[in-house]
Image (cartoon, rainbow, N blue to C red; front, side):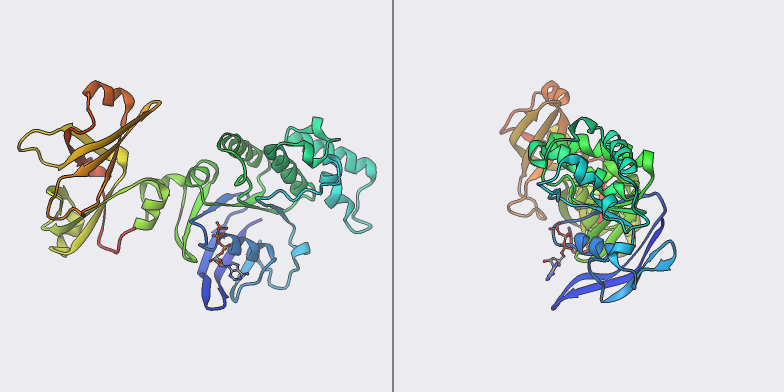
Length: 362
Ligand code: ATP
């Protein structure tokens, strides 16, 4: 079922939690709402579900306005961060709950319920736990059961609010791959709230990046990663260094470096910012006449295949006093170069990988 969100706003007292949000979700899509804490993700999800109403705007399911449709009639399944399983019921009874609550006439027979519950438990690969109680399950198992329970009533839309937020990193990783496979089998239109960019990029067909109640960008994981629409998106999706400088005749002059930026030729002498990811910085040993940012290697940390470097730039006109530059090399490259803490190095961005902006920064 397709979902259209049209100009939805929501105010809590003086605080604008959602500011004119519009978004179209195709039938069978898996969309992630991604953004920092407090940006309005959960509020938007609750409005789509019908648990909350917007002050303005509308939500359409398959082209029909849902404003007057009660939450129970919206055919929406939910999974929340804190698994809301009934503690006094077995796994089987938890999954059967929604089917047994159906009005007389629509309610399946106990034999049909049994077959459906086992089918769902098979789908989430936990049929062997049918007789256990929630307290006897791991966190990851509980979330899979919560999902089986949400799917039991065959929802047209599945809403997941940080479903793996309370789990440890390894289990989260397993479950997000599992969720993606499950979605590929079932094709239920799904909206998934997360503040974890890796999770959003790995799981979703499209990512909606939100900030302060607004949508900053909507795109495939590749689009938001490679063509961020704003400094906020660039900064939120991964680690980033910010360099201060100014535009000058098609170049950006940043801390002693010149970066080609023909699109900014018009804004000569205007203040500008260059954003560069740690792995897009080249690092060389200092030699006189080197062009780049001269900096001291203050810390080097090798973790598995990656070397993370912290560099403190030598004073230049534009450098901020407490600036730290983060660079990333492969451990192999780092060891081959033989860099030592305390050494003076030169840092240069790979030119094609610089994101230039004249705004207020991340
Ligand atoms: P998180 O990742 O922390 O859950 P979120 O992006 O889901 O954040 P929301 O829960 O949608 O954010 O909240 C958006 C803003 O609205 C927050 O600043 C929150 O404090 C505020 N807010 C949410 N619900 C209410 C409410 N019932 N009354 C007052 N303020 C609220």
